[in-house]
Image (tube, rainbow, N blue to C red):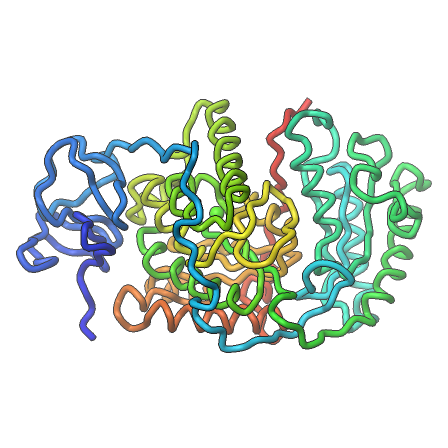
Length: 506
Ligand code: CA
């Protein structure tokens, strides 16, 4: 197969994306000569565009030409004005519901996980230590290191110790309207499926976030919670934490993986450092894998509000019922107001790297981003850090920031995250493995030992969305089953737990 020079997504598109840098004079398509060099992943006008005319990619208006753009021109971000986002009132729903039986058939129907009493199964067997307040973080971090060194080797079936330190807990308006989000995040992180039902919660003693806001009364026991101010000095704190950990490790060490149906699996997807290939290669192949998982009965979350806002009408069409559509619109409205309070709109999202990667604005980024959701119906919409109550494809509203979306999805209970990138990031999470998928061959060649799977061959005609999507589906099950470990997990690359706190800090 010969490599195409440009990629056009829909017949009605009047721009296409350069597969590699195209020098001036190249015939990009029959009759379309390149007027000036087009950088890789950037857009070229396929015909003359008048001032004010819509610039269309993915069959969607990315923006309006500020001035006339002759055919063959490079289209830079400053040449487009941003369209209005789709309205949120009375969005049609349920008009694009595909039967689950029509999704691509999964190549495997089981995986090996750690069954939990309730909720999804674990992909790892970890001791999780969660703080109620950042003040306790230093002690918990030191204790976690000591537990790993002195205790963990005696419990070979426990795969790690994770200190869940976060910036919340005190110095905050704990009764603020939106404080429910960070409180819910900490409460749900405590009961992450990879922590095997064991609770180990460490507080300081004078903070605002108290145990009763995080745990049911029957779980607030000396075995599960420790207050540092009750301990007579540092050595006493360490001793108490070591003996608490030892009791938990003994129980966790009895856990074994067992063959489970895909319905016991809950995973999340997000992208970070996207480029104009993300929506053609990495994200559609993730969407294909998501469709296979959903058809097999698994639960898949996708998120990132600013990166779906411009495609909300496409998502509403896939909402199972009016209640799901209403919740989707409500989450979008909340975020519109949150951004407005900060004096910005959704176009504050794209980064300098996104723009260098050819993404002109948030509309173009969003059209690529929603491709990761595949084509299954949306069964439920969640607020940040909420737990799903249904199976299948779920939209979990979170910020798009990689380091905030990750902890939100962890709190929602994901056992694994798939992370698509075009620019490259070494991102990882301690509590769940992260698989990284590149959008371009060049990124995989540059970072062969960080990128787990390359979808770039889809752009160059060496691979298809179905072939990479199937490979990703297999990799997800192998990583979830502990058979394979993605690079970020092998190296221990773990980002901080930046939970989302839109409420005031005092
Ligand atoms: Ca992101």
